[in-house]
Image (cartoon, rainbow, N blue to C red; front, side, top):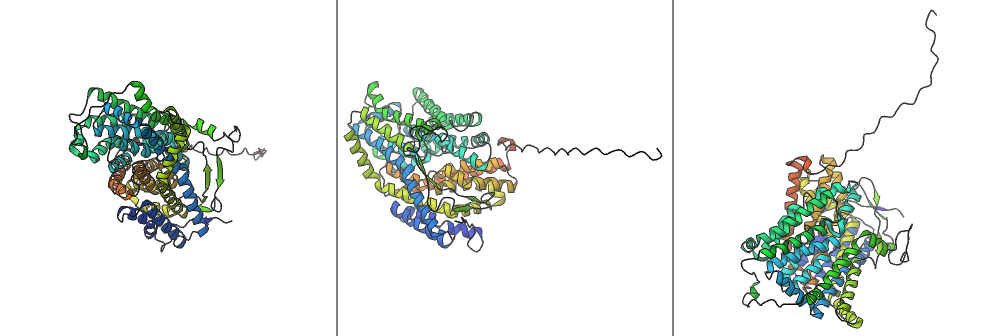
Length: 583
């Protein structure tokens, strides 16, 4: 079967007109959610239908390929994404059912009863740890659920968890986005890690202040500036040092641990002058925090400690390889059982990405990995089951809690499947590449728009890793054509992309499920959209300054290609010397 080649300018040969048409599925999805208050699963399905129509009738994608791309995306939405969401909420439900979440609330309040400091601890510092260990929606699900359990208003809990899950995203899941970016672009991994680590610390410092400003206003933010500065600066400094002198793998893990410990130490010597509470709480007397023994507190924290241990272990390459059955050269008893790679019928290598998106025509693989044991959601499930047993629940009770959780989130799982189907359709049809090429055509302003291109990629795909796969090569090729440092523009794709994480449809749905706001996804989107766009634009400004104003040495350049030695001429055969005349 001859692969179908993507077409990037199908509308009158004009890239900008084509990009406007390519954006229609996203406009339909976000417009219905944000302005017409249509339920998320209905908006996602209508956006998917729009994507299929544009792909087939405008971009001339064969209907069979478009349909299989949508099916591929739907299955990916179920495993691994939906599996993470389901089991993250399952752990939360177990702690609520056992009564341990109340104890957890009291221990956090014992550190700081001020809602602002609690938001920093959970949405920023703890969320960064979960992002570093797992990524892929897990930190939003966990942080939002914890905030809502602590008494935060649902909309605020969702919005703060989304805003907090920005600066750590580029190094999430043990550095996966940067590792993939290096593989896609061919640029050195350590160089890319260092470059992103010289862009994002600025925003790691800003985001804690931003969270509290959004939550409580400028005046209330200034009252807790020591806590904001401590959380942000400790994370930013660690992020810079680890990314530049070690690599991308442990940036978030190290940064989050330093940030949490720094906050705890600060709270031993400093507390806000007044305790900030939500309006609906201000008429109530501040209750004294109940005292719990150390054993009771440890029991309350146990599910979250187990979650962290399991998620971190599942994220390490060695454990993941074991759970996946080893390699073909060194298989174990799980080989071919715990992980099965299924080429998607009709779609695998049937779509050809062509220049200028890539340097040479490249068939797109479409492999669906059924890694039921090594999936992050499975680590959450096992942590939940073990927690339930240690809390005194029987297996039947645990199963009942699980199925009640599944019943509660079933519509949200359908929504995630539809949204991932939309994203995979736009990627396979080349709609996203068309929008990317429109950004790349901005010439001298491209350093600014390179960050916005990363933002667009994450907003479309829901993943900084996927955005790097999608646009990493385009960033490098465009930079070389414009005489820019390709490391800077590739790093801009990942750094700008983190700000799109708070508005991608997948994250919005995860936040709505975690805060029990199914059907309110449009409100959550409206809450965070302007913050996402503003922060992405600020990243673009920083990239522009790096490219046009600041010294070139501030961002590492790719190593120069080794000089090619001139070929040594082959030795010539010796010819007899003719006798001199007259001899």
